[in-house]
Length: 185
Image (cartoon, rainbow, N blue to C red):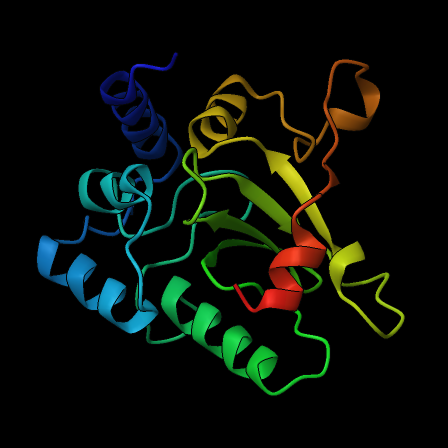
């Protein structure tokens, strides 16, 4: 089991060493505003990261998004994707999964705030060919803590040298995708 206090400290140390211009962390009022706009609570670990490390600007590759806008933000991206899904015959974005990082090419890392461990999901829409979006959702990590440990260790599939190594776990299809997309939940 991961010591969350230790993990947050190590993430903060790595974030500070990677980026001298980190945004300031957010306060409780900003977390409350984000949760009010989302309509649900952030996973506690994710809230701690924004409250104790920084308002985005750290993490794997392209870095975590800021919590609130202007511009691309966790709340803004989530609301935009949920609004598009609400009217669609085949919704693309499940409720409770917040985009926290963009990988480029319309791909996102999302945290499932409805899962106990905050599963980290990969949304990869590029192979979409119509109909359900379920084939575009992958389980990147069973939990946010494990995902952060992978980043800290430099062993994620997203690392530059990942294709040269045999020990890298690739994201697998998310078995909850069809149910979560169909139910709107």
